[in-house]
Image (tube, rainbow, N blue to C red):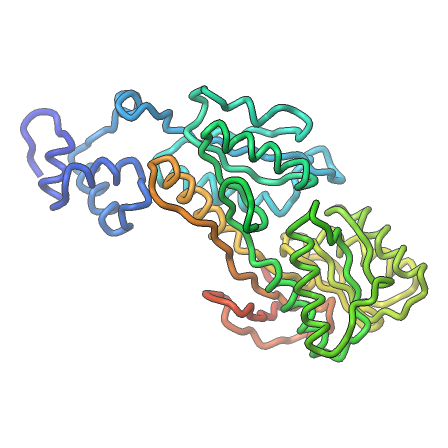
Length: 369
């Protein structure tokens, strides 16, 4: 390709066979431009050695070209204070921002601070992605403040009918339902649940409601003696399992609201001389990398963190550009391992979930997901 003088967006539009506006959106990584068109525009720009002047572009659009990711602290066994579930999502968000031509500002926040006011009337970022929160009843007020300020933001969490702002989340009810149905199909009938089932933890509450619905399908009633509250830490999971065991009620399976809770529960069972899965089958939630390396390997309800990262970034960019958006739920997938009595040499079913109902995937020991 030969272009006289310094190439510009009109040259790219002519050679790529698209409008100048499409070129502008493609170079910014705008989600409204499909991948094939964006790739064609970028290839022409590369051949012309065209360089985007981000400073000039930002001045024209009154935008910073930066998105901010706010991670909220969680109690953990190490100094990171980051729930390990968010590690893989962080990688996905970073990658998608780069693909869309945006810088990413990562900020670690304590819920006790006035973090919601730090981004009011400033140009640190064009929008916020929020990961993690404490008690939702306290957190909700901060979200309402962001809405009042006109801040563009999207969060990962439960998709609630009356929530302030926009959420992308997992279909937690379907995940709890799938886990309980699987245990029931294995002949387990005394199934407990570990995790806060309250309005302060709406994701855990939805998982509990799915579990309870599956029991009712089987003409069973959830036994309150088999439920104990727990935050998402191993220590809390161990203490919750010990509490259930001390009540003396019969127990042959546990559904845990997170993998960290499940790992703690496995330790409590082992300390009491109970075998997993022979005496008590266990299913966790999140499918963090650690789940496949426990002994026995932990069955878990997997959330698609790669897709979640893409949706969080693209939804936020739509908000920034004034385009219509809507909350979304991703379908979970049950990954069956040895902790609930699967065969050692399972048959693998298709790995991709495209729609509800939740599918079950069996994973051999040590497989990476």
